[in-house]
Image (cartoon, rainbow, N blue to C red; front, side, top):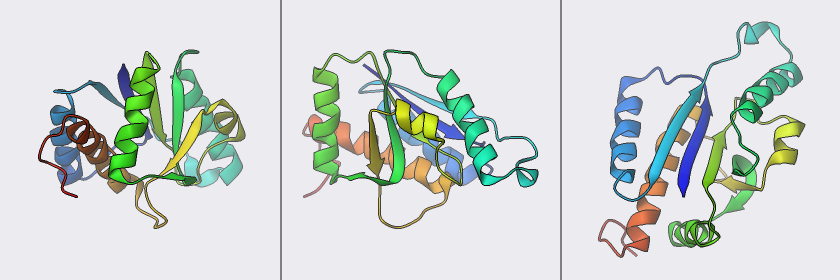
Length: 157
């Protein structure tokens, strides 16, 4: 199985990019992982919230294959402990999926078309984080999940 993370907009903080690179590299020891950054919508300041979500949604949907299992990082999604998230990933791997795709949307969330295409929603917290920080938190949690599955000492209970 391959895991792909799609995110809207480039990271403009070098420290955040370095941490994403570090955890992405660590993940490579366990699974094929790909982070794909989708470009920011041009002239977003001049667009309504609905139009911006629609345009971002079109970018996201173009990146998906029909066989992809799509999980949205969404504040209204299911919350997991790190151990439960590792079990979720194990179930996905056992199901024989070719690619599991997670998406961090833009500032206003996802279009209706993206919600309809999604196979699930995942919440990292009830708190609100910047889209930049969510990237680090999510990639680190992926890494943590694989260390849990391998009984490695990274995660402490």
